[in-house]
Length: 304
Image (cartoon, rainbow, N blue to C red; front, side):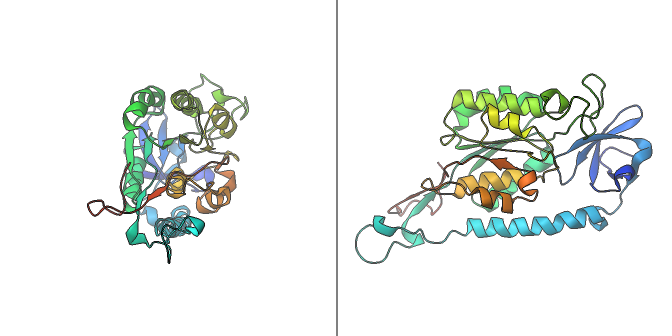
């Protein structure tokens, strides 16, 4: 076995595909390839996978990914606005070529470099202005203090890897299972405390949850603590695995929902791969704005 190899855990029936991130004396540190899960496992429990796409775990994920991508595309293909009584002038409401758009701007902090690149690629495809930074979860609070005044985002995504500790603090293990202290303690999680501290920094910068939207958490993260710290949307109510793209879907939904409308919580649950047990949140206004008329020198979609 080598660093970077794809593996599954035999004791879990090969339910999740991992990459080997590092080696301990008798075990390997693993990062999920599709799920934001950090785990460890003894060498004897690992089986190397030569063709990841052939595994049942990956095939099931790809079906869900296809549905999510379909929703992404539908969301980005915005129909003409329903102007109603606000329709300027006389006659029919303005068409899409008459106005310009300002989608909400995203600042995305990610503890996984591969997921960071995938996320930025999706933001670009969906015309969502985004600034992405790959950083260890423990560095995120200090990093946000520097980045928030500079980037001035509408939406902040704080994510990476997490998991419920298998053993009490200090024992050194962090396989994603419930710790003896139980899921109510932040000390039972690998990175939930780091995420909570980062959310607190964001709320020190802007306390208005409609002014600055915060999306936080990863696999099995402490959902309640993240909301209490000030997140609008967080994982994971059911302490389950969340897909790598779930935080991105929420950020895109927030960016492309009109400032006149509340982001649909039902759409969030339906659109994310992990569903209601994976993500949740509170009523929040969208960040998308339109302007009229569109200056000749201005592209249809602009960044704020």
